[in-house]
Length: 401
Image 1 (cartoon, rainbow, N blue to C red):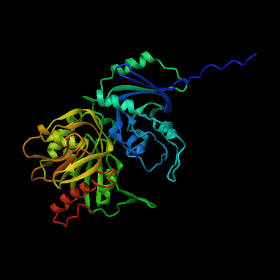
Image 2 (image 1 turned 60 degrees about the vertical axis):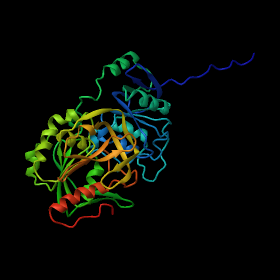
Image 3 (image 1 turned 180 degrees about the vertical axis):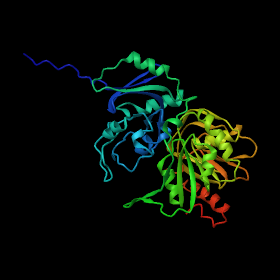
Image 4 (image 1 turned 90 degrees about the horizontal axis):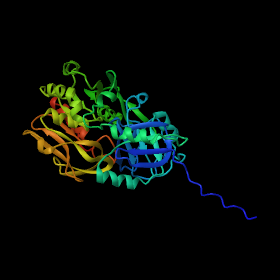
């Protein structure tokens, strides 16, 4: 008797991405088990997945990586960006094209799958990320639930209901969820190959950083230029900040709707602007400054997330390749008289920087602490430090070393 041909074997999905419109995308689960509801965005960076997933600005979001091979270099304890890893501020989900393989890199400590489990990030692989990216480009960033169950058993009706019911990021203040619990002093300086991180032992100036979800490398670059950096929680009042006698004030990046965070942040910034202390803002800090000066912000269709964005600095005429991560943007047409647009995206013309005419106050939308160019935007930290040095009558640094 002839042998029977075995039935066609199908792989049972162990992870789902369920969009608010009811679309169900099946994949293979990895990372943490369970589920999370969030907004889905895509990131076009080829490297830096660990920094991306630990950036507090990604709180409330599921990151789809357009680069197909993620995880090849593993993870380590140095390439994280949130101040308190135990709090796990950052992306709640991740979507990959290819399955994550064992790492192959001399700096790798653990594999990505194990690290995702430890961070509590729900992830899936094995889907057509190009199709998902095209969907986001066409329809905007959808709300969704990402779920991982090793046995492949899901309550699909419940997942669809949760995805459809979530209100999204508009009106949501996430800075209060990721900010520091108390003030602290930051002294770590930038990483040097074969040496690691340094320490600022002899600071020449004092910068107070308001933490709306600050990234570590921002603080390192400030410390590397001679600053003692005091990090304060997002709701710290102007009187308390000024009592620290700062030489400069930094407004950090962060997640969520800037108008929601602005309810408590804008009045503080407005009080700080009544002084002549230099002010520098990045990302959400840029949006907070714009709101404090009378501008407006708006939700973007697909946002800017990646490490290959061209931005022009009108103050120098130079174009730099920058890292970006924002789903809201400053409306350039809303900026009042006396506020100049300094930087603009060459992708879509959206605002990427402002300065207050005749005052030591400026901000940018992109992330100059990242290294996509690789250091095209580091000059902005020197520009900020020079405002402090100029006020004290000290010799200025070259903006581009």
